[in-house]
Amino acid sequence: MIYLRTLRAAKREGLETLSSADIERRTGISSAQVRKDISHFGEFGKRGIGYSVDHALERLSKIMGLDREQRVVIVGAGNLGSALAGYMGFRNSGFRVMAVYDNDPTKIGRKVRGVEVVNIRRLPQTNRKLGARIGIIATPAAAAQGVAEIMARGGIKTILNFAPTRLRDVNDTVVRNVDLTQELEILCYFLSHERKAKAN
Amino acid sequence: MIYLRTLRAAKREGLETLSSADIERRTGISSAQVRKDISHFGEFGKRGIGYSVDHALERLSKIMGLDREQRVVIVGAGNLGSALAGYMGFRNSGFRVMAVYDNDPTKIGRKVRGVEVVNIRRLPQTNRKLGARIGIIATPAAAAQGVAEIMARGGIKTILNFAPTRLRDVNDTVVRNVDLTQELEILCYFLSHERKAKAN
Image (cartoon, rainbow over all chains, first blue to last red):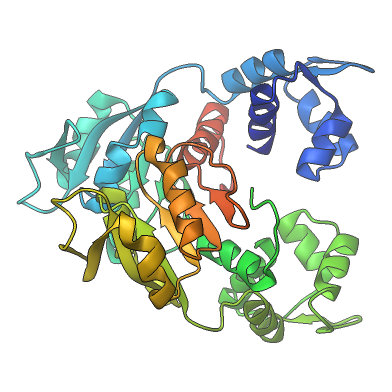
């Protein structure tokens, strides 16, 4: 969420309040739209003073469910899945990887970053106990849609897909496709313009 | 780039033209702003008909440098670096991983997905020959800023940073920080609203 990112940046800079005009300057979202968006989250701005950065951060975190531990499962115990299982950024932000699943008999039963690799076929059953509602797909492209369907059967509600293919939503599960190639393409844009610009 | 993504989606859907109003509906960017942005890329729209999807894609790809091979080096031969070295999405989009660098003597000299792991200290020298201008950092957070400085000395112009820390730009090198945690946070937002919505 761009507002969360903007508020965190403001906090890092030591700012205590942020006006909708400040947010417009930082995000490109018009201050009228900012006021409208933020009004959905409740009243935490004061006319002429702006939003309290701390209060807004706390409120937004709560609304987004970031104030409690979020359980995650990963499918794919290859390099990417292993990297994500050990990604410090997740741990530091309250995400806990409960299990890693794979269909490779040489990987099942082993541990990846301290987490056991479980047979993917057991996901629907074991996840009822683990209670994870977030799934990460780190498989080859061809396997990804099938994995999303298994995840949906296991009670996973939202999926982050790292496989280089766009997945369709499955039943009432929301899929978010991460396109790492797009990140490189943005770099190319800066390269081809040979200019100094803020990439993010 | 959001326009590139929008054009590709339109192409997948079989559309031949896209108007600025269509683009507004898909991106939330006002049609006036769309016309302004796209006018920088040259004339490829016709009033009342819209933009030719193929023509606009070709033009944008060229402007972004995506019409030619882009050489990439990766620093960090761990799980994430290895995963990125073999990421099919990169290969399919014209990105070529030239070398993987690390400081771990047990990794140097080995191959990762067919690419040799080279001592990070040799980067400034070897990259003059390899000619990569894009660098990917896949190291622990503590090492990342130092790696960015070494990359800058080796002629790398843009850096994609996967280490879970925000890097400062180095000299005339542009850094783009990839925040995988943010992707999970967006999922949390959908979860906490228990609603069916398009994540992307």
